[in-house]
Image (cartoon, rainbow, N blue to C red; front, side, top):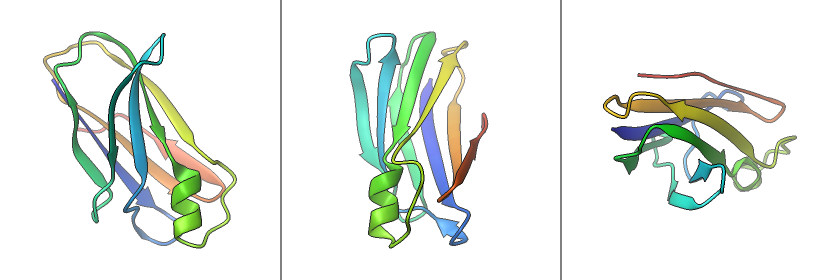
Length: 107
């Protein structure tokens, strides 16, 4: 099982580079991994070998907005998701703008 993410800045129309990303287990909140998105807005290998269960990816959107000169409403975005089949790849994308965001299960 591998886990990746991709952050796109819908307001600027480009990948969101440099976004801090933290993976934690739910419940408990133990940090499992931390990374920053690359120039393409991706973290290709955030984690591997996760067991079935609930996890949370927290995106430091406040830091990203400050670095890009945008005033954002959400200082962070937390996406909680379930790993049901540990044998599958999981991809959690984030489409971001200063006043809205969306996510979905990617491939």
